[in-house]
Length: 318
Image 1 (cartoon, one colour):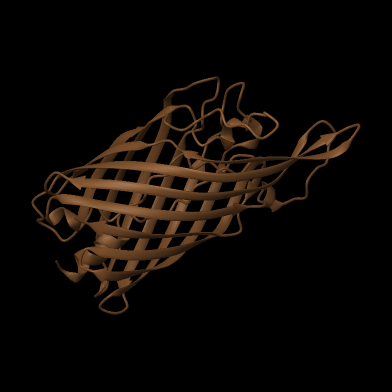
Image 2 (cartoon, helix red, strand yellow; image 1 turned 90 degrees about the vertical axis):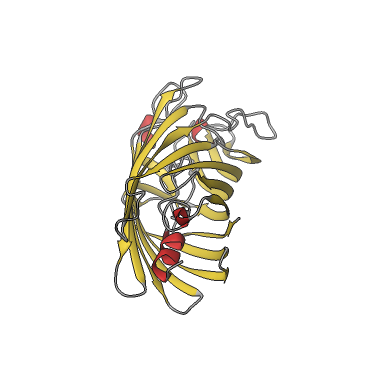
C-alpha cells in the first residue's frame, strides 16, 4: 500500500457525531476524525476495528460567545460542570471497492453537577452519575470512484442513529436527568454526508466532509436539534511510522424542541482546531491521539462548554 493511502487511512473521513449536542448541561462527544475505513483500506475487502476513548470536561458557563458566572436566580438551577468519558467502538467492514458498512457503539460515562437555588434553603447541590450504552449508529458508504482511476477519493455516507441509549437515568434522590444529559436522545435520526480526499504535498494528504443529522422519530416530547458539520484535515508523514495530523472541525446545532427540551438553552455554532499524532505499530495497527481546542463557541442561551478536550485510540485491520 502506498504512503499516500496509508496516510489517508489515518486521516480518514469524519467520525460522525453521536448525539454530539452541547446542551445546557453539557452532554457531549468530540467531533474528531479517526475513521480510516473509507479511503485507502478499500483496496482490499476486510474488517477494521476502532476503539476510542474521549475526555470531555465542560465546566465553563457561556452565554453567546462570552464566559459568564452563574446567575443564582431563585427557583432555577445553575449548571456547574459535566465530565464526559466516552468509549466508542466502531466496526467497519468493506464489501469491496465501492460499498462498506459501519456499526458504531458508544458507552457513555457521565457525571453532572448543578445547583438548585432554593428560595428558602439556599443553594442545593444535585449530582447525576452514570455509565450506560448510548445511541448506536448503522451506516453505509458508497465510493464514487470504485475503479481507482484517480488518487483522489470521493463518496457518500448514509444511515441511521438508533434509540438504543437510555432516557431514564436518575440520581440517588430519584430525580431524572435532563433529557439532553441522558445517554440516549430517544430519537431515530437520519444521517447523510459526502467526503472527498486527495494527496497534497509529498508525504501528505487532505480530506473534507460535510454531514447532516435529523431526527425523524422521537419519544417523550423531546426532539434533538438538527446538526450540520463540516470537517477538513491534513496528514503528513513525519517518519516512516509517525504522522502529524491537523483538523478543522465546524459544527452547527439547531435548538432542541418539545416539552421536555430546553429550546432557549440548546444549540449553537462551534469551531475547533484539532492537532494530533498517529503511530504505526504495524501495517495493520495504528495508535492515535488528538487534542481539540475551541477557537469559536457561540451558544444559544446559557450552556456549559469545554476549554479543551482529548481523544486517544487504536485502529486494527483484520
